[in-house]
Image 1: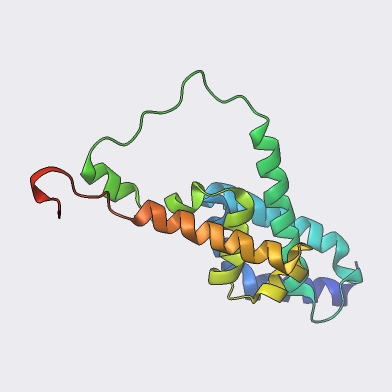
Image 2: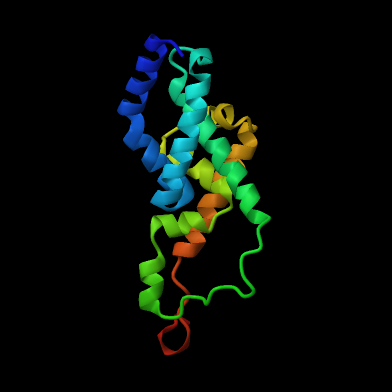
Length: 167
């Protein structure tokens, strides 16, 4: 890579490093996996840097991160993790502690999570997300709708039963 390109790449990384880490954290659900995602994405962007059009660096990096994340999720689905599932949350106090944004996002399918992060964290429009992911706008809207519905269901309080229930 030429010195001018390398300097531009370094300036790009310095300027957007914290934004890239936050985006990766929201996608992955933890900082360690997020940092690995950023590192791998930047390694690929570095190799492609001379071919990336001026002004398209952010979009190219976003798309690279998204593709790497989705590919990793596909690989993880093929892994056999344990003999038995983890125990469910039993107390209301534990349930409240577990209801963080990252926990809610972690329960969504990876495509819904990716689309919600791009829409509501990155503040991209549906056409921009469709362009970024290569997926039809209708499918993007469907992922957003289903993802939000799943989040709303998870946030909804269980209905009252017994003496306190409305009749």
